[in-house]
Amino acid sequence: MYASVNEAARRALEAMMKGYEYQSEFARKYFSQGQAEGRAEEAARSLLTVLRVRGISVPDAVRETILAQRDPEHLERWLEKAAVARSLAEVIDEPS
Image (cartoon, rainbow, N blue to C red):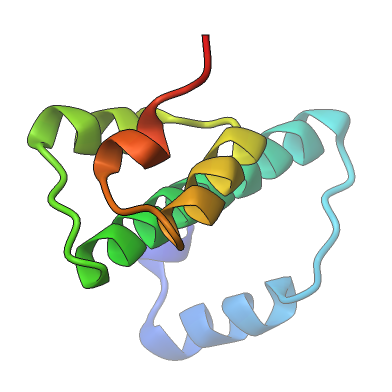
């Protein structure tokens, strides 16, 4: 439906959806899942930004590992380490 209406109608639909709370459990579940995935992606990108501005090089394989990580606690731990680490190994290496 959205694609078949003009720009003014799209803006009106978007305005109506602000603050909308999904009624079905199905919609709430997948909306929530999408939000969590978005937060994880944002945290991973923040981590990569901190590493970049601190001058810590991130090989492509490690970059993919960081971007694939979906556990928010894990990403937060890495981000905290990145703030003070001198090397990538200090950030990513996990204790055995």
